Length: 265
Image 1 (cartoon, one colour):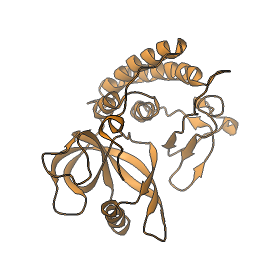
Image 2 (cartoon, helix red, strand yellow):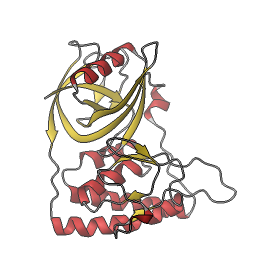
Image 3 (cartoon, helix red, strand yellow):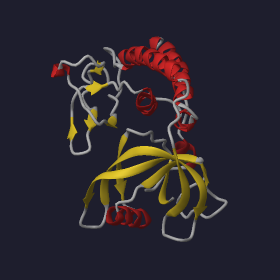
Image 4 (cartoon, helix red, strand yellow):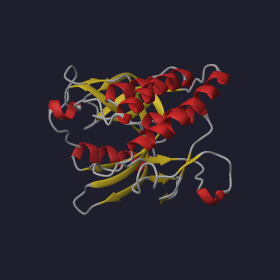
């Protein structure tokens, strides 16, 4: 399978929606190609180097990335685009062509989601949810503190609200993440409560995309071989974050763009 590549200093997990401002000509061309053909593109983490003027040997990419579909596209008179893009799956890079198009083109293999031990996955999912609720409580800004509410956009097949009457766990963004959180269906964007999925795989990706961790750790979550592996890693990370947040501490980890320079997109 061949797809255009959009290298970024970020990791996107399936189910997460990201806004993209496209102004470089090569990524305008990528956007036009995907809109005209209805094909996805790939977002992959830059491990080293810059995608600007990239040639073979100067840009190192992670091997696993996210398949992304354009949900909304607004084109400005000057040719720029504002996109709302949703990650729908994962892929492994087999090879990258640096010269066929203005943007990178990769030969990729879509990755299937292996659960592992299903009973263990269910137990780990329940444990992860409990820790995640505590994590959200601690992420709330306390009186006298400054900070920004998390802006998390997710794509779910079913969106539940507190008034729905169902028994599925529901996280209230007003009480947890802040009023800026948006849950996104395939047809519209609404502000609502976020229903916690009962599928361990979907849950593992959702939490992997939401918790605020260093990029290499999020990449390991994305690339985990099974749902069980991902949930085990998540639980360890949530335990660490809960401990740090309870003491109002955070791990200092400068982003690659801070070290290497700002990314152009």
